[in-house]
Image (cartoon, rainbow, N blue to C red; front, side):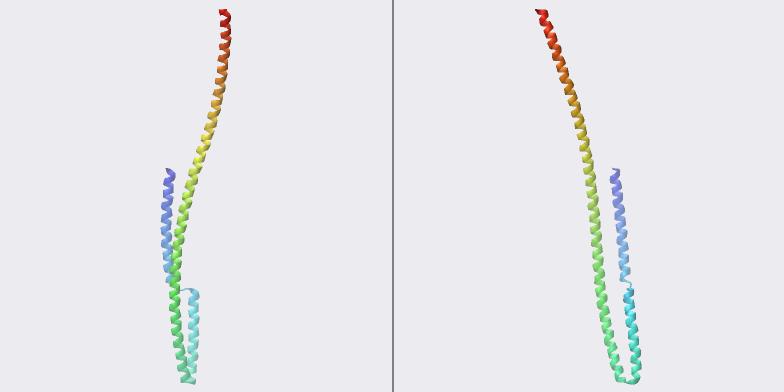
Length: 180
């Protein structure tokens, strides 16, 4: 009875820990969504620096010809739109990957929980089986002990019957002699 209470307490503890783990995972995922990867940030900074350099070159080119300036400004506008489109596509893909990771994490947690449940059940069954095997061993020992006692009693009874038969024969012979 004490072990079932301990098992129940362990289960309660595991449930509390799993709930805390789920809260922590949720916080981590929220923080991941609200933060920017350092590599991505550096890449954007490098692109920005590149754009600033191109813009400086464009300003220098302005002095040479206004036609080149118009062409360069048009090119910058196209690149900016492309960069924005790529950023939106990346954000969308990142959001999908994060969602998929969260789903897989939840599924993994469920599988781990199920495995733990199964392992607990198997352990209980093994304990029950072990107890039954011990009971069987005890019963075998008891049966063997009873067999030995019965053999001893049968042997003693046989000896007693032989003794009684011998005494009956001896007394029977004496009585016959007295009667004659």
